[in-house]
Image (cartoon, rainbow, N blue to C red):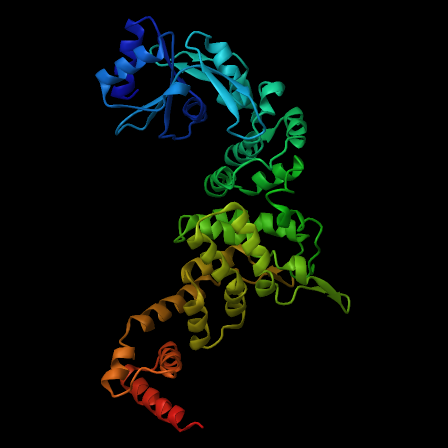
Length: 448
């Protein structure tokens, strides 16, 4: 117990109330999972009295005072009071909240979504309060709703159930799955959808469980329609013996999860893994008895962008994925064919995150003649990346060098700089490159 929670608990108990740890911090402690978020619920005293207690402990922040929700400046503690909620619309926020510090622990627990999130721990005694079978469901690995009448009032619970299943490797109770099938997700904001998707992609060992759960609940249509189109979309079995594009994508995101600690932008990287083959929706065809998806890495970009903008507002994430998708096949091709250095230099130069591209390739391992083509080739690509980095660190021809040599910026200047960059990627030393660039500039002037 933190010193702050201890002080709050002592003051509340002196006033005849009780303090409970609630929600995820209790669940995760019982699962042996670290959780730095602390949520407490204060029973048996008025909101005004609780506020006066918080003033003794620190600087209270009543960011949801009318809902009985408080915090303390500089403390990572959410402090709430028991409350009743009534749905007045179909949206995630369409609720009327009535604070009631005296409803008791059973009624307070019943407003939560799943039994494993309704567990409470008495902050003074450490006693676990479990009115709804949450400990049993934790042991059995089951995500189970509490009240069917109130559960359906909040559509976000569909995605929460799926991401909990993915994070904990749990199954969802059949009656909960059935309940989720009838819930309309269209009223959710993209921000809330992104929040659950982010947790699934970044916290789960097998993020595929999230999408398989959404598929089982028949809830891919509104937010993930492109993924639904991957179901049953055939691939060449020579390169993809695992099956359709859906199965391949699920395998890729699970492998990619193993590289999250190696990449520069884990969330962007996982979205790359999720969307890299959406282009197969518009390019897959059968020719001469073989299934092909020529140029899917470029022709699918409109689908990728549509998918991302439906869920995200972060342009930097979207730019990362749109940059990397067209390149996603190149590392494995290079690892297989071992091309000249300038070829891999060009590939890395095009990538927003060159090393991430290598780890994606490891996640996307193709199969040739029954063997993984990428197996053992990470070292080759990392060596080539090191060579690229070494070249890029060397002195090179820049715009100011050309101006100092007498060239004036004009309509051909960008083309001259582009030529200089090509020489840099080819590993040409600066002095020699400068001579070649000036010669190229003179030739440009002679053109009619």
